[in-house]
Length: 544
Image (cartoon, rainbow, N blue to C red; front, top):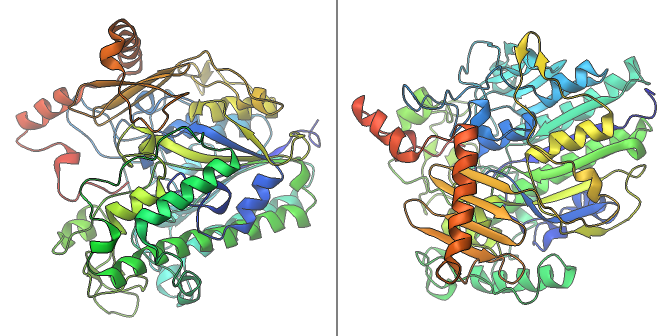
């Protein structure tokens, strides 16, 4: 039994758009992800939950994020708000798989624990992982990250003392080392490796040689590049030719009239280089699986935690808050130079002493052909590429699956392929029932999904039933879209189908009640009573 159960490797990256990687129509060179896709499956309608922490909590537990205590991010949102901490009424994938005899390893970003400095029962080693290397916080420098941890011990000094340290490489190399170490010590025991990159989340940090590969690649500008991406997506069969390309974000100019083009191009070149570096590391992880003879019986799943990120880091940002309170930046580099925080067009991004983001217009490109971004529940915020590769378990090579799915489905999938059991109780605690539906049923062929899908984040919300999606951009009214004829959400049909809207709203509100969704209005009221503001109301709110 030990030899036949598959190894499981889940690779999650951070703030990447739907169509950035090569096998999803993008300009970024991702030969290793492309290889997995061409030897496995690509899913066109898989969804995350629009933000870093909630997506991680949902993926890890098979629940909706509100059920886990991570309703928004890893912060208290008021006396009756979300705890911001992974609770004990859920089990993680690592806990379930370790109980089933798997070795369990995490390399990368955790971001579901409130306490960043002291181990608690929401840290990785306390939630089922045999070994952990990575960061507890949600973002930070790639050259000198905060909260770098091995096991339960802070090891920030390892990055501080290593002039060659780069977090994306460290995540990749540690994941590959975990695989080799596991195989050497217990070759017949199955393993679970969770790899969680911070790339391409801001800040825009990358190596010069990787950036140079993309010099000139984006010179056509975001308008023409969006059209080209759509053409490639349609040719690949990922997007239907009848779906209309969304309009350029109304806050952004046509490329021809955009100012500071040299800086804008550099931002996108660095962003692409971040993904490129990640793909290089994924190649080393694949090599470790091949060298140990484990690749053929390993289910590898790759996806992103939310849609592309349109968050701006303005000049004059509150440096002390970022450095001292949120711990997502440092005021100095490892060799003592000041870090220049903020999107200053006179400073080219990429180096350790910069801290910038790539902005709305490029995020609009990254999410081609959809609209809106991370935070929102329209397709641009929640649509992710998903690649599934498992030579011993997936017969079709290079196939496409249009079966809809969302993050709780990954726990259900892992349970089915591993034979592990989802518990009613765990270590004396009652566990909430599993919410997901296994993707394994779609490995042989596309399947219709009758079960509804639900989302909520910061008041933005949606329910999808079959081809119909009811979605709200808070505080606007609900919109209704036919996902078969208009997945780019260009034709709101709510006024033509009032009874359907009413029925789907009722489904959503029943789900929200059952899963503990707190209305945004209530959170705002509670925070006002305390004399403060809700977390997302702050200028520096975007740390996921």
